[in-house]
Every structure is written in C-alpha cells, then in structure tokens.
Length: 322
Image (cartoon, rainbow, N blue to C red):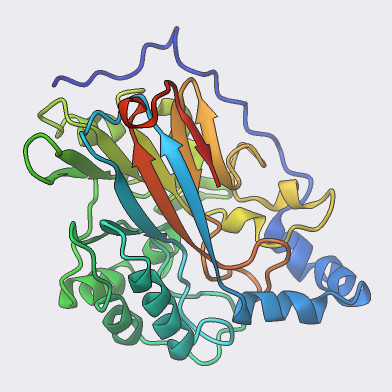
C-alpha cells in the first residue's frame, strides 16, 4: 500500500500555538504553585497520589481502519520516570506485575524512562528499571519508543538499557505483527522535541512520512508517538495513535492546569480518548512525574486499549469508551 501524506484540504487545521503566560516549570518553581498546593492542604495528597495510587484505565476503540478479523488488546506504559521518591524499584515491580496480569496481546512503552527532576532520591539506575521492564510479557511482544527526557538527559544510556534486556526500540520504523489475515503494523515515531536548539525551540528526530512509507501492505497501522502534538498530521490510514508525554496535566489545579500542559495545543491533546475526523488517539496520563514529584487529579495509570473494527462492533466510525 502506498501511503501518502494527508491532503491539506482535508486535514484538520492545527490550532496555532499560544504564547503561555505561565509554564509548568515557572509556576512550580516560582513558589506560587507549591505554596498554593500546601496552603490548600493538598500538598500531602498530591504527593500520596504520585507515590501510592495506581489505576488501570481501559478504552474500547472502534476504528474504521481496523480491518483485521479480530480485535487486539494493548497495554500502554508511558512516562515511567524511574527514580524516588515516587517511582522506586518496588513501585516499578508492582507496575510490571499489574501490567502482566492484564494479559494483553501487545505491550508498548512510550518513552521517558527515568526521572530528571531535582527531587530524585534515590536514583534508580538504568539497568534496574530495565530489568523490571524485561519481565513484561505479551504474545506480540514488548516494543518501545523514546521520549524527550531520554534524549535530553542520557539517550545512549537509555538505548543501552533497553538493548541489554532485548526490548526493541522503534524509531521511524514499522514492523508487521501477526499472521496473514490478522496482521497489523506497529509503527514507532522518533521523538518530536529531541534536541533543544534555542529558548522554547526544538528539533525533532521524527519522520512521519518516512515511517509510514515502511508499511508495505493494506493491513491496519498502530502508531506510537511520545508527544501527541503530531496528531493533526497523522493520516486517516492509521487505525490508532498512542501517545504519552503530557502526564494528563499532572497537577490539575482548577483554571490553571490547561496552561501547564506541555503541548502547543493546551488541553486539546492533554489526556484520554480523542477523535478527530474519525481518527482515534489515546493519550496516557503516564506513571511518573516531571518537575516535582506530585500529581493532583490525574493518578498514575496503566492504560489498556481494546481495538476492533466496525465489522466486529456492528457499527461504523471511530468511537470508544474509557
């Protein structure tokens, strides 16, 4: 199948990036954010939520592009950010146990494997978190992509850790999985903000047209991306896009949190099941933390997605329920 970029006349017009009056980093490290959390009596709870809560969020997605004769279950682990105080080795071990108990057909890892905030204590070495991820099991395997924190802080260390435990990394690559008649393609995109090139400016490693050009049959495609901002450019030939990065906002402080989402689109792609022009995307809230080891209103989660086609659902169009 020859895949072409989406027709500009048919594509969704991206919302222009807005100048932020406040950023998550400025808010939290300016003192206002932490003071507000503490003053409201929620500081302790947000620490507990980041450290102790774990939920499994399930989505049922009907995709018009899922032409396989059977459904597929996918476990999504995003933004692990291994490192204390909220993501120690015992916590990671528990996450892997819960993920394995879901018994999904496929496990995908969406990047940002170690914590980089200034409060990390203790440090979880790359070999330690990778050894836990090695225990993940699924019939179609465990596949990974890389995130911006991996690139910014220790890309070679992360690459080596995943290679040492035989977890393949997809960077602008696509692989066919399954047998003929029930085959699908798993595509992984390079990180979109891998290199800092100036204040608030980045250069990515992503090549969406090149990635999709590796798909050589008409079988459905599942696309793994770290940042969801690529979604307006994803053609409708992709059955499902899976993303992380945003942490669902991480600190859902009323009125303020949309400004804290690390996305040019604000809250548009912050979290959950998103459908635009019949194209579905799931954005995981992730597991770890960035900037500060706190979460509020968006607990750490493992996502399980069940995808099927309209013929298996008895309906049409892209839909889904959490």
